[in-house]
Every structure is written in structure tokens, then in C-alpha cells.
Image (cartoon, rainbow, N blue to C red):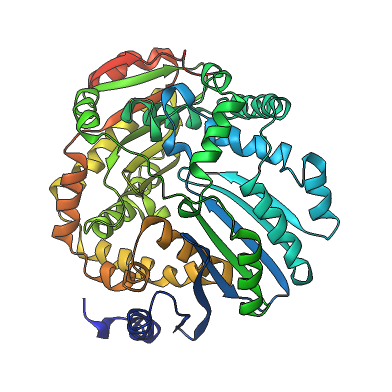
Length: 476
């Protein structure tokens, strides 16, 4: 591909991204980063340390409101079979019980009385608490958030209430066939730990107040927390508030989960010879296939992302959508995703279709995956993929809070700023041979196949491999 073939706006993006890269590389980690491309001037992002080992990032906003987020490095990927669901349960318990200075309803009254909002969230790798208030109430936000981290209340009554809420939420989710399929796929791939940790009544009931208190002691420490602050207030004032309320956070280092690939890959190869059927008397079947992907930051990441975009990530122009839905009308929805995380990753492709055509739909998904391994993508697909990814990348930075989140992301994963600034050049460097080679490396270890639908499709599925009825005892 030559630059002369691109619209002038795309050439402008490349030029200005080059400027962005030079600015990022020339700045020290502690300095502010003022970045600009495609006519959009991005607000400065400044890194500072409110306490030894505690990283914080602040960004200037034009809106007179402050948002402060604490990201704690503890999420579902830290879980095992016997404590699956603990990160969600911990987050829900703290949201109900509050902290010593702001217990229970006092927490919400304190924030709501000043027109603010507070959010708690547990994700794959992080537990986060976010508070948004008007700038003039900034000190209240810092005080509340710091107390939630330093002294959260883990009360038995709040834990029991949280457990009931989590169980009810899981029951609703598991009425959805695609959730059942995705959970089973991850459970099989990762042997029920980390990505495959599936919360059950037994695992939730095994979690005690003492268990949660130990998680707080081990993970709510300086090296395992990242702060993000967006506000129109003076930067020096923001830093003074952060130091005032967070300087006495318990000292500690970053805590990482571990993934035993030497154990998982032989299981993957063995299970890839089977089709796992979860019987459900429902009119629509869900098919999910997947494999273990590599961790974030490897050289292959961009070619694998490009491969996935062409296969199923690129909406209606992707191969799965074209081959299965547009040409044959076999599916209601189909797509693929690939996720790269600190110690591992996940590739997943899925389709929802009628029970009677589920076997042929599964066959088509696998054929399209096989094609990515054995044939180089066409030039028009390659150019479409690159232009689509390049044109959409700017929207990753469309608000100050989105920009700030990128720096928290880099900090957590230990990535250099060039991971962001060199994105377009990395995508441009992807070639058809590199996509095929990456697909071969990804899929050669095996692909797990899960189908949720009527039991009577078992005979037809057997034409495509050994069918195993997957036990549902693990579900609530």
C-alpha cells in the first residue's frame, strides 16, 4: 500500500501521529505529555506519586467537575475454582458496607448530598471505585475514596446481602444461552481457574469476612493501586489533595496472578477433539469456539488483532458475517473477539442460530478459522482492515477521561507510551503472510467447541467430532 492511495485526511493522521510519537519519546515519565493529531489537541497527562510506590495520573478538563478513580489490581483472573466470584463479592460488599468514616448509607448520602456519583466495578484484572463531583467538592471525593481504600468495612451482614445480590445476578445471566456458552468455554480452556473461574453457590458460600479482609490487606496497597484524576482545578492543588489523603496508604508491591500454560496447553489439545454440548430446550442454539491467546505486548499482537478483525471483529464486512449470515442466512448474530491480558489472552468466536442448522454453522465457523491459517488474506481485505482500524483509532482519545484511562492501562500492564503512539504504524506494517503465520500459531494448539441447544442435535454434531454432554452441575 502506498500513501498516494489514501485520502489526505488519513495521510494527515500518519504525519501527526509521527509528531505525537516524537513528543512522547522525548518526554520524561514524570513530565506532562501534550499530544496533538488530526486537529485535536489532547489535554496534558501528568504522572505523580502521592505516596511512595503509588502512581497517580491527572488530566486537565474543561468541565468544572472532578472524577477520581482508584484501580486496584485484583479481579476475576486472580480467582480459583474454590473462590470463584470473590472479586465481585468483595466489590459488592464494600459498596454496601462503605468504610469506617462513611458506613453504609452515610457513604451514599455524603456523595448524593453534593450532587455526586459513586461507582464500584469488578473486572477481569481490576477492582475500581470512581467518584464524580463538582470541582468545589473535590476534597470530599478524595477523603471518601481514600477511606474506602484504607479502611473498608467487611461486615458479615453486608457480605450476606452481597452474596444474595451476586447469586441473583448470576441466575439471571445464566438464563442467557450465550452467557452459558461463553462461561463453559472459558471454564474448559482454563480448567476453572482465572479466565475460567465460574462462580457457583458453593464457591460463593465458601467466602467469609476473613477471606475478604485478607484480600484487602494483600491487594489494597500502594504498588497495587493506580489513581486517575480528571478536573479543571489547578494541578498543584490536585496533587496536594492526593498527598493529603493517600500518603498513608499501606505500603506494598504489585500483585500479579499466574497462568500455568504448561498445564493448560495439553488440556487444550485433548479437549479440541471434542464438541461439548450443553442441553437446553430452547429454540435458538449458541455456538462458541475458542482458544488460549498470548499475553499483551508481544510482537504478534497487531497481526493477531488484524486477523481477528478480518475474521469476525469487523462487523458486517467480516468473513463470519459475510459467509454465515449474509450469504446463507444461518445466523442471527456472529462475531469473534481476541483479548490480550497480562499473563494470557483469549480468542472466542460465536454464532446464534436455529438448532437444526447449528451443526453446519459450527462447521462454517471452523472452516473460516482454518482458512485464516492456510490462505493469505486478499489485498482488498487487508486494505479494508487497515483503513477501518486507522480511521477509528482517533475515537479512542475523544474525551479527557478516555485519554486518562489509556495511561492507567499502560501503567497496569507496564507498557511504554509508544504502545499507543505507534499503533497506526504497527497496523500498517501487518502483512498477509504475518496474519497467516499468527493464525497458525494461535490455532495450532487446538480449538475448544461448545454448543448450547437442544439435545436432539447431538447426532448431527457427531459428524464433526466426538460429542460430550457437558455437566451443568457447576452452575447455580
